[in-house]
Image 1: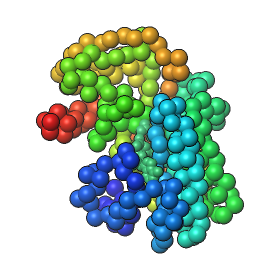
Image 2: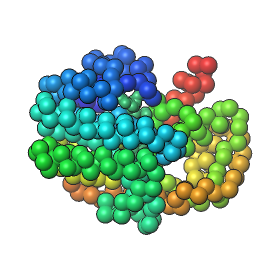
Image 3: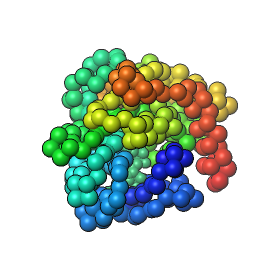
Image 4: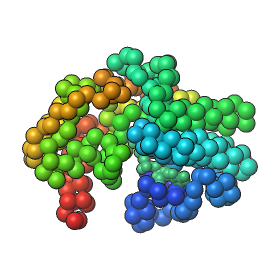
Length: 292
Ligand SMILES: NC(=O)c1ccc[n+]([C@@H]2O[C@H](COP(=O)([O-])OP(=O)(O)OC[C@H]3O[C@@H](n4cnc5c(N)ncnc54)[C@H](O)[C@@H]3O)[C@@H](O)[C@H]2O)c1
């Protein structure tokens, strides 16, 4: 998306969970490096106008399994990025934050003022990094836009141990296994397509010029039962549902209030879930199932 706007792009990633194949045919300058390597990240900041900071150890369960690593990458790694920016006078950062900073959700619809009660090492490290970025913005005059994503899905998203529900459901459908739902499936989630997330990043990086924090979701929610049904209908595969006991930490309802980001940045998610899921299932069939 940045390339299509004529932007020169440098990608800095240690490929721990990233996949080089996704960018190998693009005219970007790729640096294989770790945000914990201060010299490498600082060098990568030379001559840069805007940093899009996505590098992270991602997910609640991964952070519970590896709490030190989570904070090292997500918080200390963010300080390394900020110091690199400071050394080379980079004036803007767009940070990929997370709805995990809120912890237990107290209301059905979550706006930016929801209490920040992060309840996992991941939520805490993402919240601390967000606060660190905002503190650098105040001290050094950097412009910082923090986008707190809700559940992202879309093509190129792979099934893994710590994966999200849409890739997990797709994986199980094509493997002939029942879809596992924890609880009665009436819990709701807000899914936002990766295309919309990329668009929000580009708008925040190239068009918006203030320091701010935004919740970023579709502003709509769906029950997990309906999501399962949607994947079954679209894939044409029905392997049944295996209802398991509710998980303790799971929230019941989750939906982003999408007003602030619309009022300030003019951003509104545009990809309907059904269309995004269809695109994902088609991608999965072609790139995972048929590539086996
Ligand atoms: N996927 C979601 O639903 C979601 C929700 C909220 C927030 N986020 C945030 O969005 C961002 C991207 O997440 P994602 O879901 O695309 O996960 P991802 O694992 O695909 O992306 C993280 C990237 O960071 C890289 N990385 C990890 N550690 C690194 C290090 N030490 N140095 C350099 N690169 C490193 C990985 O190789 C990978 O390319 C993360 O900051 C995450 O916290 C994601």
